Image (cartoon, rainbow, N blue to C red; front, side, top):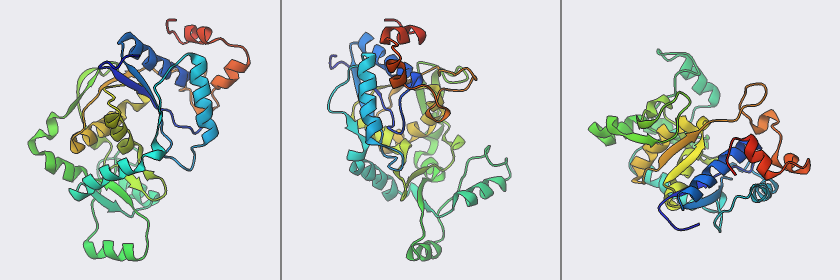
Length: 289
């Protein structure tokens, strides 16, 4: 593929085998890059060290090659670029946009339930830093904490420009959302951007990666549509370019639920072993040859 102005990517996590839903997403992005005479990148999002496994990563390469997908080398593996994410985290921290949150998951759920605007699961968590002496005591005791993005601090930094933040959707969200869409990060609350047990969070890593790799078209499933609201905010806070987004439909199983690893969706390896041809799979997915 050429080095044109269209750059997209497929970014799986090596936490299990790929299935037809992954194939649909990878082929949709790959076909779009070819149609635009652009570039297609493969990125391995393996920062979840508790679940990521190298055998799953090796299987990703085999599965994509079987599908006929071609990607540029070297492949970016997130676990090899932790310094990039730490630098972005430091920039946010230095500007007072993050705070240490010492609450446990149980305490977060209780705080949301007691909030005046809705029960847990419907109201995102909003908090703030502890008083300095209390924070110092907890740190001295070695208590675990997460770095949360303060929406209050972010709003204060943007000032009157806060309500003007948007993103461009050229596909469609789950509710048919398309075109220029206002960013509403408050629907997520003060999200966690890093913590000791899992390191940097997905939202921060993905915007850093997309910027460093020059990705200007993000093509992915509708299950990630809502994530744009936080990711677009982080792009603006870090001065990173905003890609165009194109979210596609999700493949559903016979039970009407989204195909997923945890639901035992048939793997691409299993399809290959029972003799399914890539062209046949393409046709079943509704994709042209």
